[in-house]
Image (cartoon, rainbow, N blue to C red; front, side, top):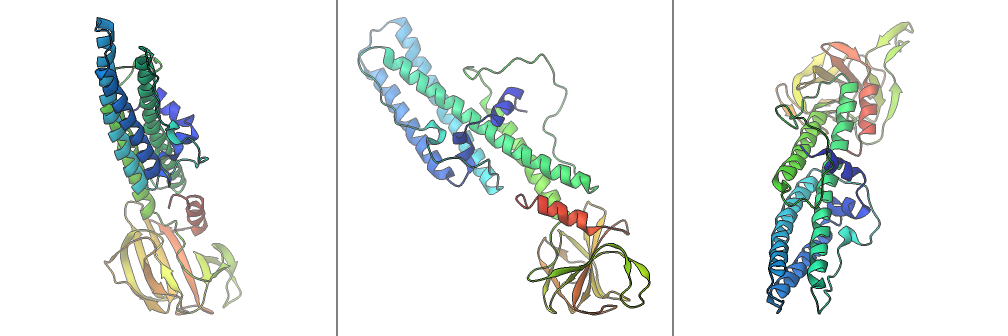
Length: 347
């Protein structure tokens, strides 16, 4: 797991770091790699110069070579993590288009040993930047994961995610040092990858949750969940779902990933499809269809067409009657659809 300090840095990361996994990702990484190349040339140049062969100079040059290799390895890890984050849609806050990652040209001075100090400082700055980039990726992934889990828990969906750590840990808190020579780069990278895996698992759990709008095209909500006046008898009656009025033939969509548990005709519902959403104890019901596009036992994904709007069964006109049930008990679909709207940037 990342140290507290590394995670904290992510919250205060510069706008430069935030853009590492934004739309300008490849441009920033190319510029970063160009600067690494410049620094490698600078280190080689320092080696080739006719410095006095003192022990101190040799030790400094060896230190530069070590830092140079560490930077290259660290950058490879950051690039891999940024690529994985990009495929998952992780987007830290947007930033202004200037000085991304503080990448600039390296212009060594000439003449004395101050070149060594300047090059060492530049290498260290980039080591710190790439560590902040890793922290930024982890912070963005953790924030998105927490949002999803909070919403799903609010809907009564127990979300089990991969553990971030195993075994007992502890000890006094000591702030991390970015200059630390023996920093565990692989351990930090693995910790960031762990946050990305947890985010991916949260996204998968969200896909199974029926929080997605179950109809496409032009429609309006014509009746809510709860008690209402029955449109046929005029008496007070309970309405177990939400009605979406739409033209006959409008496409009806699966509200989440799941397995079609029923597809056929049922009294009052007309042509109806039921989908069981794996791992959630939830079932969604889509009624009054003019056409059924799926079969019982078929696996469906979020947003896949499952039928067409109609007016079969006990209906006064073309509409979709949509229900969400937990263990057979009707729930208000509005709370699920509202959660989907709040997570629209994640979905």
